[in-house]
Length: 393
Image 1 (cartoon, rainbow, N blue to C red):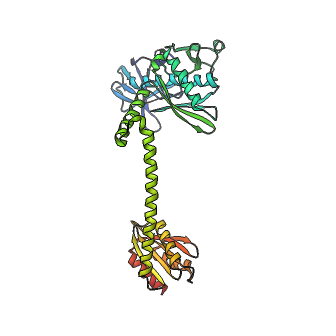
Image 2: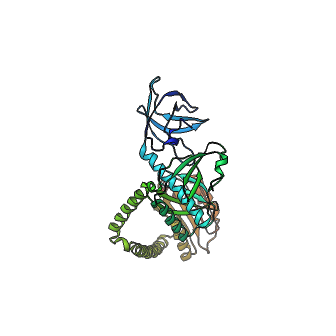
Image 3: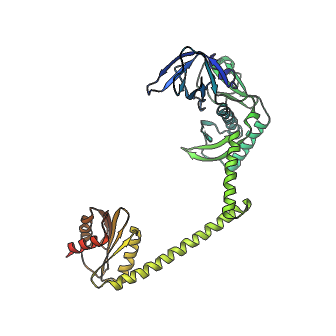
């Protein structure tokens, strides 16, 4: 553990080391191994550090077979000392989030006995999965309040290496996955947890914690939250959204909910009115088509009409003109679609007519004895009608 400087002091931002070796992995990525490092590798739910080695960017850090691999954009000069610098804002953010997760998990367990079974530290938010199928808003609020009380009390966060015998002195929140090199992260009189991550020296450095929401995931509750500077970032984002909405809705923040409810109701009424007007237009359209048709089969061509609209119009037509067959076609962007419908006083094999029409456009379709529909390759509606008429005759 001596060469892992982040375990000695999580606040080390710069360090010096010797280059032990640099190689390429199986995928061709270049990595360097140093005599010591302050770069934290991915592990325990915490992402890796980024930064620079002699000005060369470090884009990933992994521990493989006990070695810390620094994946870099380019090669380091052999034989020179290595000066490393980690991206501190990223590291301190991870320290805040990870420590906040310890406190939140301990708060859930202390108040309600809900154990944390998994943890994920993402780019914008964090999640923990709780071993429960239910979480109420009241429970979440009380847990959040306790977590923030612990943060505000400025309690120390202590790391300690112990052996199995010393471990018996502590009441751990979860079972350990290792039996040697045991590292505890301790918030005295509140949380004792085995952890290999980086954390600040006190709870006050976490700043604050906010639960954003939760959902069910495989019979467990997944809680999403943020800590530290991320709380301010989220607040800033939400504030900007609210400012835009207050301007768009012309309503103050406290009236926004009622204004949106009113607008949604108005929109629903407008949609209903539009549908009623569409129905009226279809009826007028149906009457015009019927009046224009002198033969037993009446055909009409449209542009950019959906198959649903054609079906609705066809049903209106045959309900009024029960002694006729109607062929409605629509020239859409990349295909031609059609609907065949016949009134109940007509005879004829509608499915047979449809199959012959589909053969013209290499199409597919289906339906029943009174209404069929289909679509296929694009051609003009006029050409389609002429070919269908030619087949029928």
